[in-house]
Length: 259
Ligand code: CO8
Image (cartoon, rainbow, N blue to C red; front, side, top):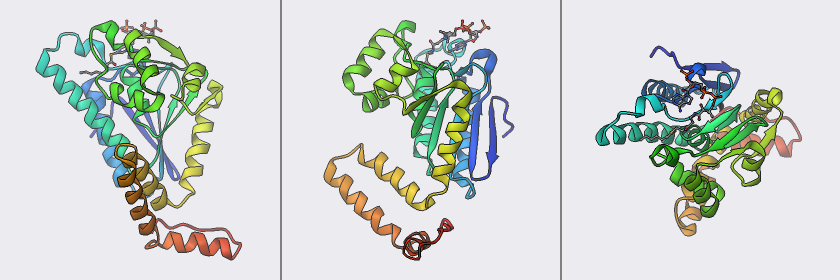
C-alpha cells in the first residue's frame, strides 16, 4: 500500500512509525487508520524488527480522530468508524513486539487512545493529554473508556472523561498515564535508547512477557498465573534461553538469535 499519512522507517533492530498529517495535527481519518493498520501488519511479519516507536510529525502526536470526517456521520457509519479504530489499535496492542509511544505534543481523544494502545509512553514536556469527546457530543470510541481506567484507575479516568479536561505531561506522569517526561529535544533519543535496550533482550522472551501481561491483566489471577507458567516453560524450548544462561555462567557476552 502506498503510504501518504504514515511514515515507516527502520533503523537496525527498531522501527519508527510517524503519523504524518501535520497540517491537521495528525488527526486520524479512515485513510490514516487504514495505512497504520498496513504498517502494523508489515511490522508483524518483519523478523528483523524487535521494538517499535510511534510518534507524530510536527507539533502534535495525534489531536484526535478527524472531526471533519466524523461531523456528518450517521449511527451505522459512526459505529463502522469506531470499529475500524478499535480494530487497528487492538492490532497494535497485540503486536508481538513492544511499542513505545513517543508523545511529542497533543495526544487528545483518539491520540490519547492511540498512546494507550502502546506498551510504554514517553512524553515530551510539551505534550498534552485528554479525552475531550463529551465536549463534542460523543463518547471516546477507540478504547478510551476501557484503557484509561485500566491505566490510571476508575476515579481519575472518569474525571478526565466526564470533564474533557486537558492535562500537561507532568500531570499525566503523576497519575501514571506516562512512564517518563523528557525535554522535547531529547524525546526521540530517549525513546530510541529504550527501544534499543529492549531490542537487545531475548526477543521470544520479550514477546511472551508482553502476551502474559496483556492477557493476565484481563483475566482472574489463577488463569493469569497458569498462563505465566506456560510461557515460562516455553522459554526452555528456545536456543536463546540456553544462550542467555550459558553466557551468564561462562561470564561472556550473550548473543541472542531469536530462536
Ligand atoms: N480533527 C480534524 N482536524 C483537526 C483536529 C481533529 N481532531 N484537531 C486539529 N485539527 C485541525 C484544525 O481544524 C486546524 O485546521 P485548519 O488549519 O484547516 O483550520 C489544524 O488542525 C490546526 O489546529 P488548530 O488551529 O486548532 O491548532 P491550535 O494549536 O490552535 O489548537 C488543539 C490545537 C487544541 C489541539 C485544537 O486543534 C483542538 O482542540 N483539536 C481538537 C481536539 C479534539 O477534540 N480531539 C478529539 C477528537 S474526537 C476523538 O478523537 C474521538 C475518538 C474516537 C472516535 C470514535 C468514532 C466512533
